Image 1 (spheres, rainbow, N blue to C red):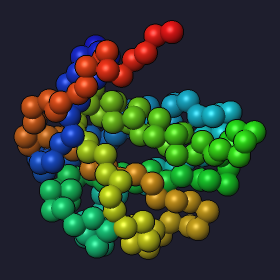
Image 2 (cartoon, helix red, strand yellow; image 1 turned 180 degrees about the vertical axis):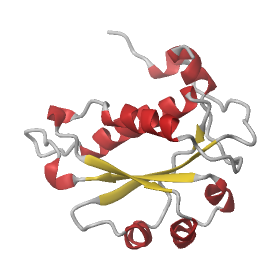
Image 3 (cartoon, rainbow, N blue to C red; image 1 turned 90 degrees about the horizontal axis):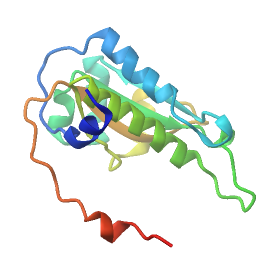
Length: 167
């Protein structure tokens, strides 16, 4: 699939088929995240891939939307604030770095015919406990991953002229 076609076809998926995600596709998707640029190439993130149904069940206390757990895979992106680059004014770029990696992951999933949905509205301490995440990492983003059962229509996007200023 062409890159721009991938961007145009990507949707937030909230209904998944039970079909498993093939390991070769999952590997390519995870590798896309690994290759994402990060500030000063610090790579301050890690990914946890959840396939185990009991572990997914534990996550229900963190995010209660039932459709989330219909996906065969859930990925948790964790930030490593202690290893991230900081600008000279103290601004840490760890959240930006994790977001770029997840964007690569989400676009790669779309190119593979898989769906995702960026989730930030979860209880981090419940995720930390369920996934045994050490204190030096922060669970930052979750996404289900699987074959879409339903592909929604595109959502509204502001016109380019409203978002871009040329000087």
